[in-house]
Amino acid sequence: MFNKVANKAVLLVLIGGISLTSVAQNRIDQQRPDAPKLAAYGQYSIGVKTLNISHAQQLDIVNIDPADSKHLPKYDRPLTVEIWYPATQDSQGETALDAFIRDGKTEVKIVGKAVRDAKPLVGPDKYPLVLISHGYPGNRYLMAHLAENIASKGYVVASIDHTDSTYRTAAAFGSTLVNRPIDQMFTLDQIEMLSKDKNSFLYQAVDTQNTALIGYSMGGYGAVISAGGGVTQQAVNFPRGVPHGILGIHQDKSTTMIYPDSRLKTVIAFAPWGMNYGMWNNDSLKGVKVPMLLIAGSDDDVSGYKKGVRAIWQGITSVERSLLTFEHANHNAGAPMPAPEESFRFDEALGFNVSEHYIDAVWDNVRMNNVSQHFATAWLDTHLKNSKEAEQYLALTPKSNDGVWAKDKEGKAKPEHSYWAGFENRTAKGLRFETLAKGE
Picture 1 (tube, helix red, strand yellow):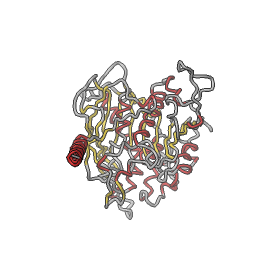
Picture 2 (cartoon, rainbow, N blue to C red; picture 1 turned 45 degrees about the vertical axis):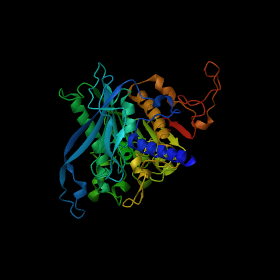
Picture 3 (cartoon, rainbow, N blue to C red; picture 1 turned 60 degrees about the horizontal axis):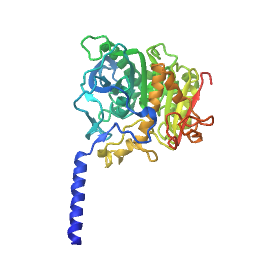
Picture 4 (cartoon, helix red, strand yellow; picture 1 turned 90 degrees about the vertical axis):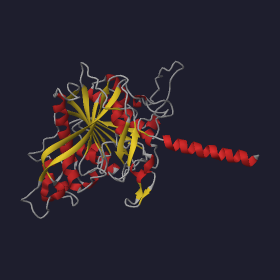
């Protein structure tokens, strides 16, 4: 009798295991019970479309001959852009995205709330634009969790596949150094054109004069330049960089340095790479002219923290700016989507477990994503929608652990209450949010 019962139990477990495996999904729309208030999805249904654009006659950095400065090859640079947008209510259709993961060869399905090719919801008010720029390597889906979350709150979000920087196209690093800010602003130009095109799904739907840029790692590097932070001569001479001094087009003293674009109103930079390699100094960072929110892990060993992200935050003295820190997190703090289950394996060619590209040793992915969604919403609503209500979520005790929870039985705050706005009791832990005023 015991063996029959035991065997039946084992069979049920095996069947259950098979069933669970067969229906498992890599969901990007997860919300933990302890997610802060503004992480929740907004009022809008969401659509998603793929756009292919081409930037004519760009320098072909990959094929430049370091020994020949007279003949600089050019090409039409292709870019694929994924666009999330508010859609008509209760849109129905495919909600899975086909995305390659870090190994560049495994294609997986990630699932969210956005419906493929849903009908856009166009009203009397246009939606602000948010550009998203991934790391090196990465792709346009790496921050899909954030893209569709923001779109549900009344934004059009355009996430770029940067040629020569994706999992499948990663090539000469110099291409990334030169092209990041160029790609970002060219995409802005293209979205503006579509907003005026009667045949486009974005016609009269997006306000490109009210644009934000979100960048992660090398996307953050490009975002700092796009915000006005011209690179240094040390950057131009960077040994892994670009031959013939071409990176000089992004120096603050260059006559071709056109940043920031007047349409760009704010930047959110996750773990921006470069300060720890001398890409900027305090003088060149003074060129940043738009408010910035920087997000980082205190143990970031790629972009650096004290001499990296925090130093950028301290150096952009021409604007008010904030720094959100995940204590003890590494480079993946807040930006990458939850690791697809297919990534949990060691890859011989990479030399590491593929999941390491997404996960953190201390923090849970979904927890970090929810925190990022909350703060990105507060920041964008403040700077693109002029929301006074959103400002309360940015006026915080610097160390979350120092916040005091003190509310009466009716839930009204007592005078001593200093807990982080939007966080429930006992949930604002291990974080810092610091703000410096212009000139500080």
